[in-house]
Length: 489
Image (cartoon, rainbow, N blue to C red):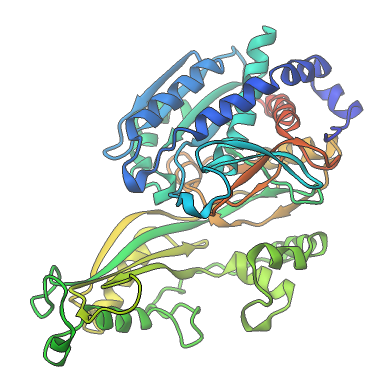
């Protein structure tokens, strides 16, 4: 179990020892809450549990002490807006996502919705399930902190505004509408910033503060009978390829224009025009992170033996955080069963994503993609944008980030500062106009396997340097008291 530093943290958090006891006493209840949440997946791409997930999230907020919580319609998957008025001078914004990625049970060691508890050698007891670390585990830790306040009859040192969505995993296509709701926007304008609870620790106990995140745009390129009459409307005998155009080959040709021959450098016309290079300070932060992390473990986790171009760790890390990408998530066309089948597919689809860095925008890159394809005569390639948003970035020296640093320091948890995450979350909705709020991903704890089989999150840690569920919840208690010092906005 992580022994969070007592002296400095206790001096900043009134009654901290008593709060730790309350959290420990609710451990089983909090684990059960996480298991129950895992058992109800909202999967936006499959339109699965869309209404049920929102209703469940609303009830979780009420049970944690929010006085009001309502479901906000978005035109797609609804979200949840909740407020907790503690009569405090400072208000903190909290962002939750309650949706998860799809899963194939055949790829899992245990059923992905069972929330099975198991022992990880050298790490402790973990929970395995879809959403365990991304993002229900860390969010449960935050809710556990609030439930401890409620159980002990103590008022929070800050007011809270919670905004939750069920479409993050499909790039939040309707989330801006939720935030633009007049009541939601008015509440958020009173906050000192917005954060998403995270589990930032690695196997050594090293935590991390993220100053931003890449943006993301999810889209599909489609070729077939629905896009031009030169393609068949259904699969036909492959002998017809001598006289009928192939949607699959046409899609391959279009895809090949999007990146250079190296297979990863974007070549969409104008795509790189507005890319902001890393600053000297950002490179310095990356160097510090490289020195503090274990390259071999990172490669092992990815299942690779080398980086692009056989680059060193520093260079690949700079590339990781600074380069926008054009990634193919999947290709779907024709027969994919055992053996071969003599067909000419009537349809081909590529599922892709852009990852964006400052100063790129969603609208800019979508416009450039369409112009790029049109210029090369690919008017028969249909572009369907299913979601997306731009990057977000917060100043390292902002009071919001400095408060996070102090919580790490007072608890004697070692940490790095990362210029931005190479992953994405829709922080730009808060970080950009008209709200212009600082944002961040914050918390301790450990887990892995987001978007992958056997996703897991530590609930009882046997490593004294890594937090379990209880310690992560207590860390959030410390954070709320630190945010309370930021002053009224």
